[in-house]
Length: 193
Image (cartoon, rainbow, N blue to C red; front, top):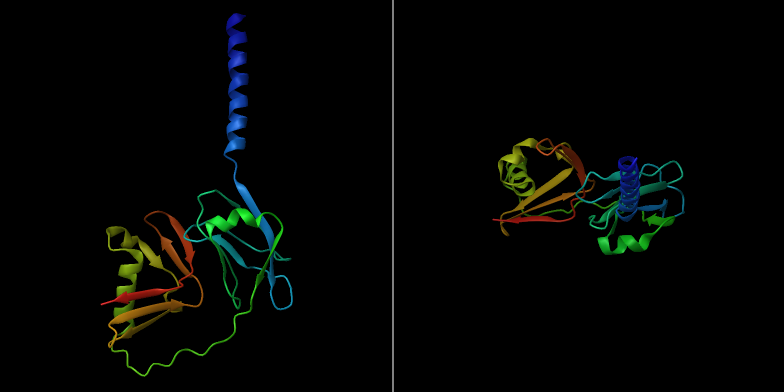
């Protein structure tokens, strides 16, 4: 009888401890609606994700979304085709709260830059240099694949001895070595030689 009583008290204390631990380490959530800044219409299928991670969701029919985060997450990115990208630093994420409205400005069509200097390098050569610097130089790079290489625009300037890479949409990377896939918004890449 004493043994059962002790075991019962022990199990009750264990369950209380587990519930408390679950409450203390619970994740926070951000919920909101993605809207067009021009006319406040809902944007369906917008991508909401934490930069450099595989944590992400898409906005629903009414532009609504809900995403969980931890205190150590990276920047929150909200993007959709045809719209400017919004990025929130980790320090700003806690201030967002619930049921926020996120207005994406429409991306205006721009003409590509015209260069007066010829680019002597082939696309293959520029892509090899880009991958080596972007994905890394160790053996794990061979298990990484950029799925949509065609969205990357590469330009080598012989007078400046630099290579610049840009992309108008996120780069999709499959990392078979670590077993994940991510979408990466390439904002700025410059490589000097």
